[in-house]
Image (cartoon, rainbow, N blue to C red; front, side, top):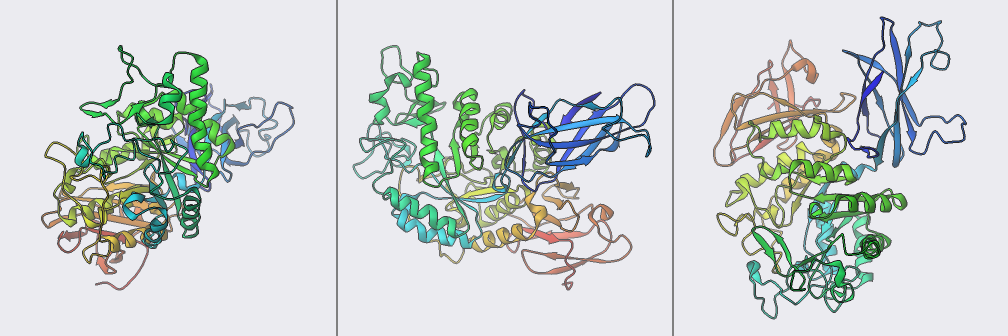
Length: 582
């Protein structure tokens, strides 16, 4: 009997996820009647193998099973190729060294295959930076900022919609219902007489300018991610050409978008189930055509706006269709929605997902960071859902960032960058922009969604040096670029959180300690399992703080730390570097 194979997605025909070069820990329950010893192996095949011809097909990777106790067995597989794969477990009675192998055992049993989609590394690992091109004067001027962002160590430059913006019901500053003649409107109100999703706003530049930006960003070591927002302004060409693709009120008018209590008078949502099957096919093909067009211009990452407001079957279809031709294309789901819906979108094929990190500010409790990271790293959804931690977005200014001091921005940045392999910030974060629209509204005051922003990125109080340092630390520490290895350590103060990560080969180990209180100094003793961390239990040992460059000598398993937010909000300790003690 071979059961409960992991990793796996719960739905039939859906994929668990891995990246090339990742150690995939495979487990399964395996047993039989009687008391005979069992043995077995895990094998990784391309999804189209073994084929129907009956010929022998070699696996791309295999590993012997090791007993984990209680009839659970484990193995490690390391995929090397992007695309669809199958995991197969084989088990048989262990007859000893002279009893034959899997080819000759009479009770050789092969499990049903479990699907595994293997992505390139950027699907799991990346530091994202979001900016509005119009606030820089267009694509040509964005190139200069992009080089600065690359110098800070970011991997992905994410651009909100770059398309023409409608005039009908255009929003003014601070989401005002009436716009002035010079107000630019929301980039998410896509489409005008100048074109729709396949067009570029003329103020930003030409197609050639965009392609040049993509190439320059790539040359700097980053990638461009583009917003994929399936909605239209009332002026979008589709509204006149295909009114059947939209929702209609009883009086025949087209309904605008609503996300109570918010109403988006400047946006028409698409109806993904139009009146006829012919209409549906045409509309879905048109939506796929948007992706194909921007892929042809060099884009390989899409941040998808509000995917939870579109049908799951559409995402299952369009992501599979795109990745069939372009398996390196990645999709980030911007879905701050209910947990089961968020997980279902990941199962439908999204490469990454926004998460509730934005609102997780305490250490303990059901909604604390400890419990949430444990769920993301080890829960059932961890087999197919990858988190991307964003302390802020253009829509969300929450928690200690609201009217918060620079230390609040620093501590949330450290948490995001060291907890998750992927994290992102929205431009202005490094300048600690902290004014909310109101006490009740999580949006920014004078939101860049509705007006152009001019910022002084060279300010001496910028957090850019901290961003640069953190991104450098991430690149030098493989442990920080994985999620499932995170382990929390108890502290004597709930305002001080401590967690470690170790690489698979144990050669890299990092301990992060953060003061969750941006206003006051906090101190605590940390409970460490020295043996598990590879630290000596019978003599003093040194740890090296990657943020400050200081070395510290510790003794025992309960070292003491004190973090004053006016001086430092966190330590990121390299547990393997033996520097001078300070």
